[in-house]
Image (cartoon, rainbow, N blue to C red; front, side, top):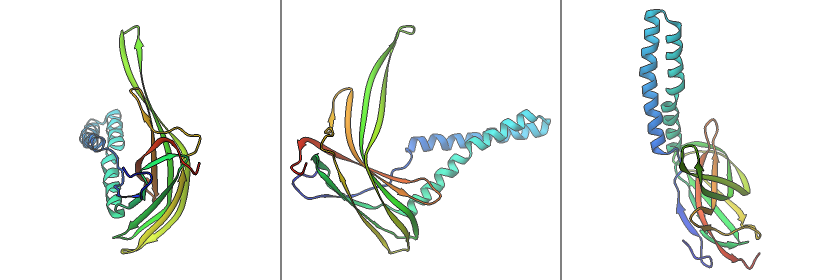
Length: 218
């Protein structure tokens, strides 16, 4: 973490993706759907069973596209590359936050716009008791509050070109500082959305620490 009185932190970031375990599960389900759906479809054709053919087609349509989707997204992310973000990681309540975005491209890409959000994430963990089953269940709820959002247009870039943008955010003077206890946590985040044409946004989420102190500029 950088000192609030000091300079800003230069961070090489990586674009967030779907968790590996979820990609693996959905990819395996796609393979299962292909084999099972194909077997049901072939069985339906041989026995002239409309029900079996419908089940086979549904399995293929519902499961096979996922591995294809993840392959296309992974290819697009590799083509985009990782940007470099510069910001201060430790702030006071009411303090301004400067975010510098730099992206050097090795391949031709098009970016519609950059969206930068200042988020306050609330994580609450609670327990509920079921009198019928006599079991206690622990649940965690997460809610993101968008405190501020700014955006800038981008454009099309050739190999060797770069994109540089500057964003100004501010932790509101009346807001709560970061804190974490056993069943409750408030976390401040900077989220950068890279709006890409015809594909899901690429996301970068960076945590920042807001101290329980008021900034002089507040």
